[in-house]
Length: 227
Image 1 (cartoon, rainbow, N blue to C red):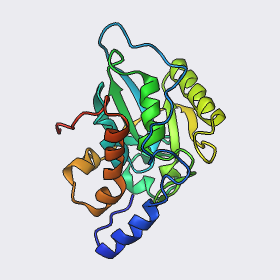
Image 2: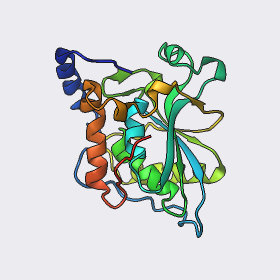
Image 3: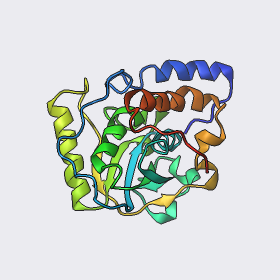
Image 4: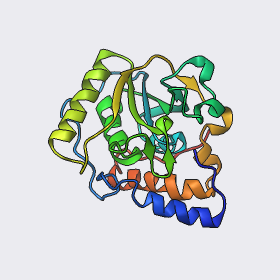
């Protein structure tokens, strides 16, 4: 993930990010269609977890922690082994890990299908292979790590729905694979965007995602209270 502080580099970032949603409607004013196949809201409160990867985990966390019904978020690594689940190793792009986020949510307040809708729209561009904006490499790939058959079914159905409707200008490249492990990232990565709001990378790459969430899903948006 980029650690950019110079003004000149910010300009380069701005140009790169200008095309981050080139193949998607994520940057538009209208949200993408809701999932036709989805579970109903649960009848009583509870906790379930979903794991997604879509570019730098600073940005995906800054989005999902502001979604009503989300109880907790943690950034980490999925797709590789426990022995290689460190930032220094993952950035070598040889570990099989993707920068990921574990989203713990209350299924009586928000469905898995609604989380998928946010993931595919404002959280990242699902048509970019092994990159998101200025971040390049397989650790930035788009992945849904499903924890059970229901999540697998819903994810596959939604991708098929979006592709069939040609919602994006290019095919969705998101992988849908079983979750074999989630390993928490280092402490300084947790809620990084909130702890470093003036960081140029955050301003250019991540803040627009939060604004898109607020604009496209006002009924699901909530201010982040901090942690």
